Each structure stands twice: as structure tokens, then as C-alpha cells.
Image 1 (cartoon, rainbow, N blue to C red):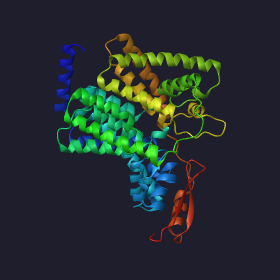
Image 2: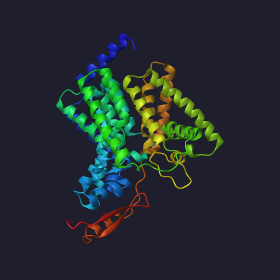
Image 3: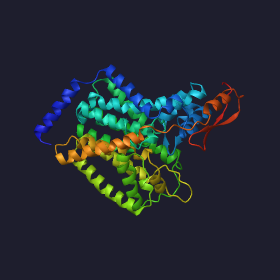
Image 4: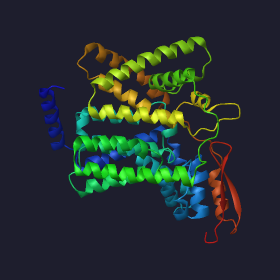
Length: 431
């Protein structure tokens, strides 16, 4: 970047800071983002039910063991503070409304990156209009079914929030610092992301040479130590014992089908296809997509480059040790190739979409034209994946009401999505 470009960039940052959004505007944006999120899965609010770990683990542990004791239990090798706190809030409502409480908490976290992006502290990403386009793309992201209104998957959203906070400018007062620390602590105690966010925080602290940056890096380091203790001591056997089954062919299928093509088409079955022609198409997609992302990485600003680095680390960690439990005779990578819309494709898909948005502003006409064509193609995936399928009604509300009238000590197994899961609760005497 030339001195002239650096001067223009600094001027733009100053202008954006002076025209930062007011508090009521941020509040309105937060509510609008929540409404957009709910529109993708309205049943999560208007007919809320537990899904997978939401009820089977988080709420069941909070109810049967007590929320405070459950808070210190590891799951899949890591401490999971946010979903356990959400389950603790769910205990304050009738059992039939507990899923709604957890889903509202998930919606709130899912909307948070929009506010951070549109904050004046994120002005280094670009103009307010460009950041708004990043936020819209985030809300409309295809191939993200598992991420929509899920308190279990909120840990990935919290990791995105921490990253956006790390690359943002320093907060002006104590209010901003308290917010930063709250997000850092909540994310650091929810899942393994502090391990991968630590080098990002360290680089920013070394580069920025500000005391606050070192404080943030120190906090993430301490949180990483806590999660390492959970992984190596508290729950050493928490990871899947199934064979990994890694090989170059499956890697190409996953990268081409679950990430590059899914960015354009939404969730698809190309990665699971055994067709030779489909594999050739995926190989071409991997070559073209990787070259495109590499070019963006080489020419984008620091914030976008660091996001690519974090995404690459997350994808590598996800493929090295996925929490996948395939049926007997199936490897974990085979299962990953067959399942679209899961959390492991979230950051890579978002990185692809954001790189296309960045390229659409390029001064290179060929690159800009290609990016605009890709953006038009993405509309197909966005429309296709916008509405998430509603969970099957398994009669949870009726089962919950029956449980509430049961005598103390009654052991009840409540149905839960996906089918085959359930929630085992032992009735308390105080209820």
C-alpha cells in the first residue's frame, strides 16, 4: 500500500469514527438482525423445541445436577459455558417454555456480529456501506443450517465476535473494555476457540504495541490454559473414537462441494457423489476457488487477511479432530462429505462470501466483473437455503406439562429432535 493510499485509509477511518451510529440506531439494527434471523427459522420462536445437545445435555444437566455444578462439566473435551448459562436461564421458566429461552439466547448472540461490524470501531474494514454488505452476507449465509438459532452452535458465533473485537480499534472508555472482556471470557470458556484466537491476538498486540491489546492477549492465553486443562485432564476421552479416514480425494470433495460450490448453490450433495464427472467438476472448483481466495488474501487489508488465517486454522482443526460420530464402517471424513450445512463449513463459507464482496470493489475490472457474476450466482444459494426446515413436532409441550404434574422422584424421558434423541429428567420435589 502506498503512502497516499495509507493516508486515504486513515482519513476514511477518521470519517467513519466521526459518523458512528448512535445507541438507538445500534439497538434498532440489533432488533432488525434478530428479526431476519428468526425469519429463517420461525418455528424456533413460535413453536420452540429442544434440539440435540440443547435439551439432552445442557438443560438435562442443569436440571438434574443443578446449574452451578453443571457449569463446570466438560463436554466433548471442553468447557461449554454459554449453553450452560442459557440452560440455567431456562430453569427459570416452565419446562414447556425452556426451549424458547435457549433459542432467544441463541438469536441474541447470532445478531451480535452485525452490531460489531457496523460499529465505528470496525471502520478499518471499510466504509459503512461495505460493512453493511458484509453484515447482510453474514445474515443470509447459505449452507449454514446447523448454525441458525442453535445455542449449541453459538460458540462459533462467539468466536466470530471475538475476532471482530480483536481487529477493531481500541474502545474509547471502560464500557467498551468491559464489553470486550465479556465477549472474550464467554467465548474463551465456550469451546476450543481460544487456542486459535491466541496467535491472532498476539500478532495484533505485537503489531499495535498497545497495553490494552496485550491485556486481551493475556486473557485469551489464560482461557486457553483452562480449556487445555478440560481437554487433557477433565474430559480426556471426550472426542470421537471413530476412524478419521482422511485422504486427498475426500479433501477435494469436501473443499469443492461443502465450501466452494455450497457458497454458490447452498447445501448440496456433490461432495457425497460417487460420479467421476462430479469429481472432475469439484477438482476444477477447488483450483479456481483456491486461486481466487489466494489472490484476495494477497491484496486485501489486514483485517480480511487475518480472517482468512483464522478460517484456515479452524478448517484444519475441524478436519483433524471433528466431533463426528458416524455409524459403524463409516469414517468421520466420509460422514463430513455427506452432511451439508454443519458448523465446520461456517467460517470457510463466510470467508468465501466476504472475499467475493471484497473483490467486487476491486479496481481490476476483470476481477470485479467475475466477483459480480459470483454474487449473482450466490443469490441462488441464499434463496435456496434461506428458509430452514421446521423441527418435527414430537409433542414436547404436552410431555413437558405431564412432567410438571408428575410426583417428585419421577424419571421421565421426553422426546427431542432429531428423532432418536431424548431428555431424561428426574422430577424435583420443589416443582
